[in-house]
Length: 80
Image (cartoon, rainbow, N blue to C red; front, side, top):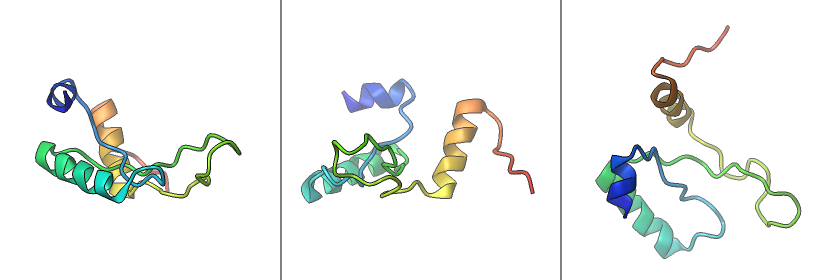
């Protein structure tokens, strides 16, 4: 199933989330490496009902740049 998602344009896999088990994270890292997927942070926040904190796992700036470039077809531009 993952291969089909990759073929359809899957960008990455969220790994570093407190609800992922260490074994699950290791397996997902293997799959990300195998399929050339990026690893974005899990920066989403769902309010007080979830234990994760806002900005707990951020996304590496290089991954953000790649995400922008793949989504738009243009290199990211940062104003000075």
